[in-house]
Length: 467
Image 1 (cartoon, rainbow, N blue to C red):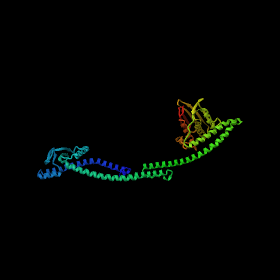
Image 2: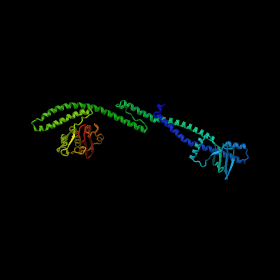
Image 3: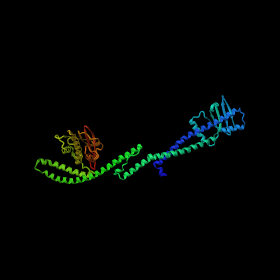
Image 4: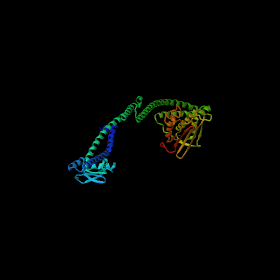
């Protein structure tokens, strides 16, 4: 029984019975008050009939007949006022003094309820006086005295009948509501729970996705929301599996590519000793590019293990680093995309040069590709400055701005691609590298007039080192 009462159906059944009984009790009190008023009015009517019978016989009745008339009316005496004359028509000895007087002509609903409640509490009973208006214009006033005990018993019997009837009504109502709620709510909820349990056992099985069938709007909305969530989860799980396979493939490729680039680096080192001045000048740049490629392969292997190496902080000239990034991306006056560098002379920051190069390279590459996609010329501006607590670096462009989908998942890998076909991995890696420095990478603005990112790097000590 306790287990049933802890269910939604059981609690709804209890609440239904309780509320119906409460409603019946609220109805019972006025009903008993109305019954009491009818009881007293009936006594007044019978007393009036008895008094009119006496008046019709010109007071020629025997004491026995008078007593019979009073007993039939259920009163001790009758006073009738006619033609401004107050006359004791029928009378008999009153066993005890009159306790209360009730004038039904002045009684309102609240007063009737109060008087009925007081009579129910009066266990001992007594004699009461009741005043009312005669029926059929039989006078201006009629007054009787009667015993309150029989009236109280009649009220209790009436109340008991109402309570029994109320109990039957509440039980029937509760059962009907219970069956209706079970049909309309409980069974659909159990169906949703069963679908959720079955789906949890095999979340990749698309056959276990719920098909909305509920006719109740709220339940149907819940089923549709569950269906959408299950569908999205299946897609996410499939994407996760594909990404895991892709990660394993990329790790293998990066591992082999790193070995190939290491060999190429050895040959590039020998080019530095070439007698050709052009080759000698290009050799350091080639070596630097290969070194960065090797570092990128190693970082890719590290990213596959869901971790980035901590930055190796060192003081470095920022303008030179920006020039290397611009040169690597072929941003010059002769190209479609030009680069402007606005950095205070001699500005030096404390950061990991390789990681900051990757961050700026990703941002500049995205900007260049966005401008080139429009087929028009454009400009990329690299600027920097510093405050008391941090350095800031801005990367802005005159491109078309970021698409809405890219803004929603800007720094999420494989979801925040800034161009069609992009993976969004560059921005995700960049944000992670900046966070490794204790800084932040944020989007300042984007629109038809271009896009601008800002990198904030703290000057304070971090990573277990002194500032």
